[in-house]
Image (cartoon, rainbow, N blue to C red; front, side, top):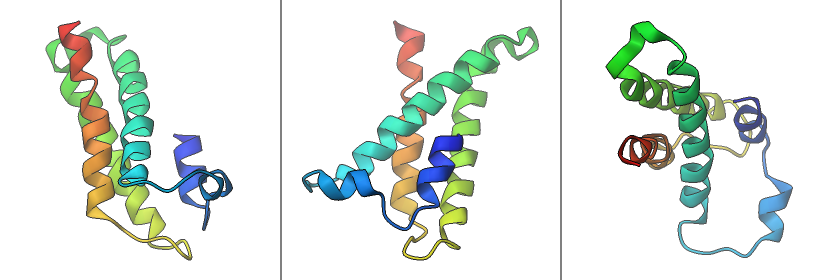
Length: 103
């Protein structure tokens, strides 16, 4: 969460400037970073027995809420914008933990 917050507070990310531009690069990066956050959230929530069968729901909702707050944070960062498409990509990434349920 710290790394996501840190990189979203930068006006431009130097590493991304050096990589080739391709269609949906930004959205793919959102999916990857939030799938990691979703997996880590799931691992934290599964340690609590009282959550039982709702672990996936809580992990996905936690990831989604963090994605929304991160996009709201970007409103105040020069050169960054609020994007519903980014939130959607973050939600897809966070939802990929459902695959863990079927593996």
